[in-house]
Amino acid sequence: MTWTANSCFVTLAILFLWRGEEVAEACSCSPAHPQEAFCHSDVVIRGKVVGMQEVDAGNDIYGNPIKRIKYDIKQIKMFKGPSDDIDAIYTAPISAVCGVTLEKNGKEYLITGKLKDDGTMHITLCDFIEPWDELSETQKKSLTQRYEMGCGCKITRCTSIPCMVSSPAECLWTDWLIEKKVYGGQAKHFACIKRSDDSCAWYRGSAPPKKEFMDIEDP
Image (cartoon, rainbow, N blue to C red; front, top):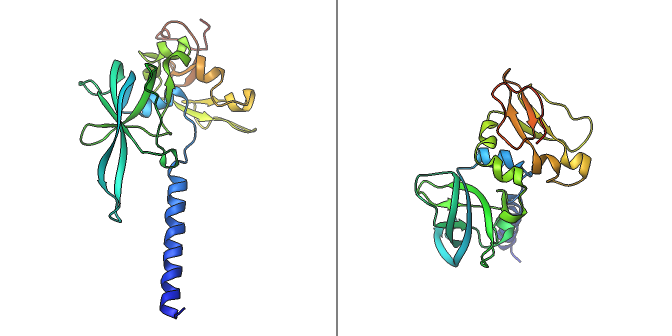
């Protein structure tokens, strides 16, 4: 093999490894508390899949065609988003690049995602997407008001000790530390709400917090 050919081979190998690493890292994200997912998403809806097809979405910077899965959606309720209903959602075709698989069997989902400049909704594995029937009653109720009340708070995931807040407007999410699961009691039954002194605290209740509440309350 000549030096030129060998050099080309090495260059292509490096390019392949770099692009492989890019794909591997493309879906790296930390779990988000449902409240954080709500606050950081452009769109939050309850809906179900009524159709699915693979569509072209242009070309990448290397000229390779980009494929997307288009889910036709029947929107049941919008909790956050544009004035028009969402009738389609787009995602990558495989999970390796964060593509989401939704079932077309009448199952209803809570779906959070981003809006593109063209007004289309896109989702990835990093978004909070759960079957509606698997949400707790607190999570369902929080979608209408409570999560929005806490969007000025920061939720910090605590995975090891010591774990401390860095500001009064912060709540520690300890599900993994205490229950060894990502979505435990705090994710299912609590919201991090700003209090009357502008600090934040976990709130559990069947009704929206009182305007001047200063501590955690039970249902």
